[in-house]
Length: 358
Ligand code: TXA
Ligand code: MG
Image (cartoon, rainbow, N blue to C red; front, side):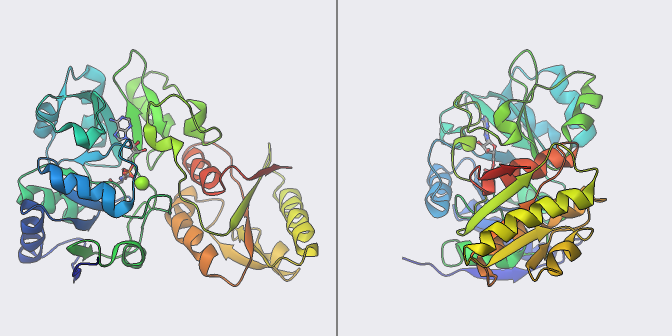
């Protein structure tokens, strides 16, 4: 049964206090509010209202064993949520908060365990978005918020993505336009002796290593190549970011000879076309001509010289696959450096590991 969803437009840089107060009141009464962050839109509830947190899982159709990130507006809140906080955590927080870094720590006893799906740990971040910050402040509670998409779908970077997935299922959607980064926060586990990358995200892992002066362990599943049987970050076991149509990612060991690479991607598309399939190609500005000259539809995700642009557009393009007049999509791939690791993690998962190596 659907409920009434109110959509309010706000200025992302200087949100109207009254509108945010109204949204905070929804949270305080145990309702669900979709709000913008600098990464993607989040589906929020007060961490202290268990029924509301439970509804987050229901509404998203998210398995109950996939824990949520807790959003705070002030570093002091961290000590109410976590225990045994290592110096490393303070070092990172000082550098990156507010911003797209999530840290996993030991959970404090007073935090309802449903937030962490029963794990002894808790994931926390302080978002750098004026709307999110004000909403948390006025709610007078940390806000548990996964990305505001249906489980398995690409995360929402535009208000229309949220409407597609959650209209009629939440009390309020705050529309503040397109989000800045377009990919989710980087998640680092700080509970062990060595920091572990649980999910590559908007901050390149190399940058975090430089701040810590320490190597961060990058498990296979963080690269998006294996499902990861160890339930360190349970979210990695489930289907993620996937369009309904088939997506094939064409990977190479070397992208420096770009024209050669594009010709190999083209060859994959040509083979599929022979089977009477209408193929779309996720391409870059540098390569799209190669495919368009042969009559293929292209979805341009950005320029290879600017991985931020590619990350910013990626989820939107993944959603376009299902809307475009094509039967399936073939995507170019990127070197796993900097944001390239984040992009490849998302692409591999979106393809359900449907990868061709050339
Ligand atoms: O940028 C973001 O992080 C966005 C915005 C809304 O803040 N949020 C987001 O949440 O991406 P979600 O739920 O879609 O992804 C959270 C990830 C999942 O992979 C989950 O398994 C992991 O963080 N996670 C949460 N709590 C954890 C914990 N205690 N231990 C390990 N992993 C955890
Ligand atoms: Mg998500």
